Image (cartoon, rainbow, N blue to C red; front, side, top):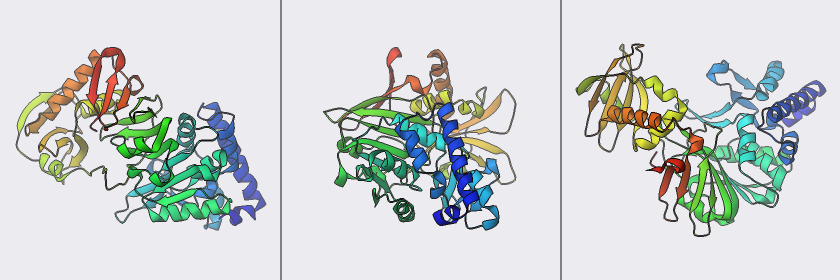
Amino acid sequence: MTDVIEQDSRLSQLAADLNADLIESLKNSGNLSAGAWRAAFEGIPRHLFAPRFTLPDNLGGLVLDVEDSGRREEWLKAVYQDEALLTIFDERDMVTTSCSAPSVVAMMLESSQTTDGDAVLEVGTGTGWTAGLLSHRLGPAAVTSVDIDPRCVAEARERLDRLGLDPMLVVSDGYLGYPARAQYARIIATASLRKVPSAWLTQVRPGGTILADLRGDFAGNLARLTVNRDGSANGRFLPKRVNFMPLRSKEERFHELPELASRAVSAPGQHRQTGLAPSTLRTWDFAFLAQLSMPGTRAGRVRIQGGPMYYCLTDPQTESWARVDADTDEAEREVTQGGDRRLWDELETAHELWTRLDQPSPADFAITVSADSEQVVSLPDRATQWTLSF
């Protein structure tokens, strides 16, 4: 791929110009500083890590490939948009790997507080682009990157080899970290998790940081924690959001909407009217608090064949459920609930609490993880806290 672009002077110049424009845009948006990270973006261009990809549906869903000689200019222009590129799909045609949007990558690197001399563990190698940026800044010997997908690791290694970079790339379950190269100054996760893995706390030196997207079915947010000498960690959720794909791990799974939701769309239950629409959960700030307030709750849309679309809340542990018509625009709609928990009641209570607390955003919340892995999220100014159970 590198040779294809380098051997065509017009395309090579276009790639350089597009990368320069992207970097300037990232700088102007505040996502990229003028220092070492800018130099990394200049030295590790994105097109080297995305030879073939699918654009997201909102951009047309096109498949673009550098090997398609008639569309190389279109391919390059798509690479340098500030958009995620979908790179690997599983046997169900579900996307499992992407090249994250440049603004997200820049913001993650800047937020990680990484500096010269740090040893870094990246969880989620993906295309290898972030490992390349880290290697440019810190030197390859300081960088370890793990991914559970052997294909990701093999392709990333090949791309980095072409640049003369050889960070430690390992096929491994990122939930377990990588103890063989600990201790790290930073752990940076480019996949989302439901909680901070206890293994990470033992692999980061005191004063080091963990940067991870913690989320459940409703919402989540990027959090940065500092590890303490006693093996605990504390930090805050950050103002900027990311939306990484779930970490694939034997230890932590983002379950698909369970079979319970399929039953919930037609099961008999208790009916009443509600003024709280499912669309309320599109308000990110509320969805974040609702996620904290409703441990173990799953959420998703289910359509009865030939019938309406329902928004369903489920708790697989208690087999509780709630369903609401997701299509109606009416102010009042019927909610039907079953099981020991009244999940829609809980959602309404969470909304009342969010309003009473003056509608806090994720950046208002702190997070503490004890040495024995008890994880608590709190609103320090309001003496309110929750056990993290996304």
